Amino acid sequence: MTSKFAQPQAVTIRWLLDSDPAIHWQVMRDLAAGSPEAVSAERARVAVEGWGARLLSLQGPDGNWGGGAWVHRSWASTMETLMLLREMGLDPTSPQARRAIDLVREKSNWGEWHGHAPFFEGETEPCINGRVLATGAYFGTASDRLAERLLGEQLADGGWNCAAPESKRSSFNSTLCVLEGLLEYERATGDGAVRVARLRGEEYLLERGLFKSKATGKPIGRDRKGGHDWREFVFPPRWRYDILWGLDYLRKAEAAPDERAAEAVALLAARQQPDGRWRLDSVHPGKVHFRMEGHTGTASRWNTLRALRVLKWHSAQP
Image (tube, rainbow, N blue to C red; front, side):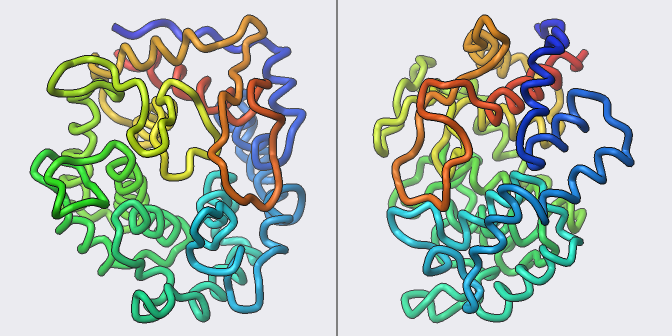
């Protein structure tokens, strides 16, 4: 059963709009009914002002951010930075984006361990390759080879796991990373086989209510890798699953109505604070370029935007 979406209070919308262009333009588009012209003009600011421009300025002459394609214990690598620019909605056709992506394509690679494979061809783990595919497809450099590899690595239960083939059971973390990539690739190419695989992956999540064990039906309280609580909402989510990220994916995919997501939606709605906002519940430790929000436990514009969009999407379903 879906619940009626309560339009955010004007004070909440003003608070969201009083922010970086990366958030401002998305609020205008998704919550404030901005005109297409105004939304486009605001989106263009991401490349030249605020967080987006700051990230673009940090790219090195070797095409990388943070010292390489992927760097252990760091959220400042090339892959993580491109994922963040995608979340910010940097226009992939802008001159600034094209210059940055051309430099990545020409110079960035995965190093000796992976035969110096070009960045957009990915490496070996599906949790990484799904995110590489997502950035490649979003920025117009989708790798057909990488998409085919991910399709070949889908497990019998419909998901993916970086520990496969030793593990025959999928991981929420890896599955959602791959689904993000397949969705962007499908939008870029219209590939029917990718859509079939993606819908099987969605079914993996829905069969588990987005946060439960299929075997027991009980909530999975904490991730086995690092102990992160899936009911705590983090931005950026990185590769670590949480309920808000799972629901936000379904929203982006325009998934069909499904009662199996209702409990997760109710949990999300219950986390709204009396002032209409959602908090930054925690952060994943590691090096970052710069902080975009306050400390843990404070109101989060990113999480509030994402949560309100999810509730709006879910409410619109028949």
